[in-house]
Every structure is written in C-alpha cells, then in structure tokens.
Image (cartoon, rainbow, N blue to C red):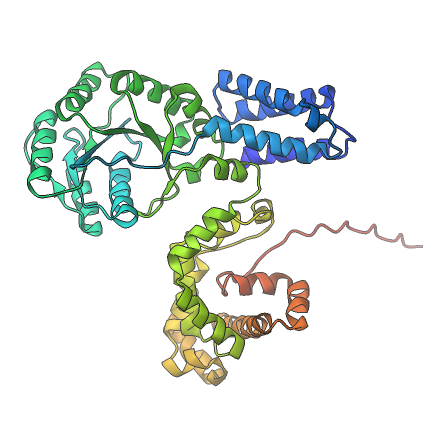
Length: 472
C-alpha cells in the first residue's frame, strides 16, 4: 500500500537531512520532487498543486526556518498537511431513533459493493451491537442476490430478497417495511452497480433514494482505479448527495491517488477502507494514521487496537506466566498463530511497526508457512505438544509422515521453537541474556518472533564486496 509514494517521500526527506537549515530554495526543490511523486501516484492535479503550496507555506513559517533539522521538520509538516487533505476523522455511522437507520450503498460495477455491504453489516453487529437487515436490491447483476445471501448466512445476518422482481424501488420499499415490522435497527440497501455515464441506471438509483429517503448514502469506490474513482464520486455526489465514501482494495493500491484526492474533490469524508478480502477487513478511516503509513512511520495505534481485539488481559497474563516458567508449549504457540492470522498475518502486522515498512523489502516473510507449521503441530500427540523435549528422531519421522513434510522441516521447527522459548523465558525474567540473544539472533530471532511462521528470513547483504588480490 502506497509503496511507491512512500519511497519517493523518503528520498526527498533524506536529501534534506544533510542540510543545515530550511531555506526557500531547498523547500522549492523538495516540493518539485513531492509534486512529481503525487502525480505519479495518480493524485488529482489541482489537489497536488494546492497540497504543495500549503506544505511550502507551512515549511517557511518562522519557527520552522529556525530549526536545525530540516528533514525532520519537513516530515512533520507533510504529515500534518496529508492529515488535513484526507481528514477530518468521520468513521461514525449516525443512527436514528426510532429506527431503522437506512444505509444505501452505491457504486460502480465491480467496485466490491456487495461484499462491502456484508463487511459493514459485520462491523455494525460487532462494534455497535445493532441488528442489521441486508436488502438484496441489485437486480441487474446475475447471482448478486445469491452472493449477498451467502455472505449473510456466513455472518448470521438476515437478507431480504424478492425473486423474479425487476423493480428496484419496489424491493427497497418492501425491504424497509419488513425491517420496521420485525424490529431491525439498520437496513443496508445493496443497490446495483452502474456506470456514471449510464443515464438510465443513474435515474434508477436516484428514484430508489427518493422512495426510501436513506439516512446515510455511502459510495463504494475501488481505490485501485485512481482518478476514475474520484471522477465517479463527483458524479454520484451530484445525483445523490453522498454522506461518505468507502474505499475498497486499498491494501492492493501501490499508488494511493484515490485516497489522497477523493476528500478534496468531493468534500465527502472517507468513512471506511477495505484492507483485504475477508469479512472483517473493513477498517474505520483515520487520516492521521494513514498519513503515518504513507510516510513510512508505521501505525502503532492500529496495531495495538488489533491486538486488544484478539487478546484479553487474563489470557495475556497466563501466557506471560508460562513464558517465565519456560512451560510455553506448541498448543500455546498455535493459539498465538491463530491470533496473528486474525490480525492480518505477520507481514501485515510488521508493516504497522515504525521503521519496519522499509525493512520488509529486504525480508522474505511467507505467511503461508504458518499453515504448513500448523499441519506439523497437529501431527504431534498431546504430550509432544506440551513437552517438545519428548520428540525423538523416530517421533520426528512419524510427525513428518503425518504432516506430509520433510523430517528436516520438523527438526527445524522444533529447534526454532526451543530457542524461541528460552529467549521468551529470559525476556520474561528480565535477564541480560535476553538482550544478548536479541542482538545476536539475526534471522533466527526474526523467525522466533514470527512464531516459526517464517522458515527463512532473507536479508540482503549490505557489505561491500572486497576486491580480489591480484596474483603475482
């Protein structure tokens, strides 16, 4: 996400780090590179122009000019301006009383609207404790109704449908009546995808909106379409008066043009962002955190929030006690790996750690290894999972056969696990040995951090190759 833009920004800041003070000349040079980076990231031209102007004005302020660390100061200025550009924070769904609150989903064909409707329903249930009804009002796309019903079944959320009906206004009105009659708190209308140049379809969604008078209208945009997403948002806003935008596929967008442009062009806040295909991969949008990610500074707050969702205080205390005693077993390890997977995987987590985003490029982190390791652990007996010291050579061969893996894989996992367990014991005890292990562990330390989830962590060598001595 935003990889190309992050690289460009970092190179600009590095070029300024060696300067004594900020001057108009070096800020102008830096803004020239920033402008180029933003345009290459498919950010709207007018937005880019205004952003660079605002950064330059802020950077030339009296306090900033006196600073002896121009690179650091410019990072702060750019971060503040990025936050303003994408903000303010408005990830709240405004519920009405008495209900139901009607939320209408609109968007282009293929923007991921139906899946996003289901993700939003899940978020409403889990975060706000509301009872949603999803209305299958996409009567144009084949199998759209079935898709929504399948997703609703997975979530345990009811879906209102009318088979064989082609009147979207009628289905929307009947769905709302059903929700009122059966005590639903929220109605999520999944409308048909359309092209903003399709006059007939645009008229249809305007009529649906007029018929049910939704309290919130969210436009679902594919972040990977860049400027097309911004242009469609502008068109839809003129027809529907949007309340917010949901950006999908942001995890696959290496440029970031839509995220940086859409608020400035439409004036509508980005409410949520889709960060993956799973139904729990819908996150509230925080401009300050996104600015931090763009600048390669990680996102610790989001990382902590994800961890808090997966670990309760009592569970954490039990784990800490086991680590201190050295009784941490493979069953505990599996629980940790399952929690890491729910948080988005090791590679996703490491990108949220400050400074690790750039380091990830020098590492080969394979989250797929976790599944292979789980297979090995599941092939162990309960006694072996509790006490890995029991695993002899013959047991390793049996475990390898059961998991369909090589004996070397089993031996490597056990070795890494034991080293990791010893390290955790020393860390929990606060011993100096822990520090030595951290400093000298190298790839094994990283492997242990991943819980064995990486068989190999490859790091490119930065040592200069020494010239060969000429033979006499």
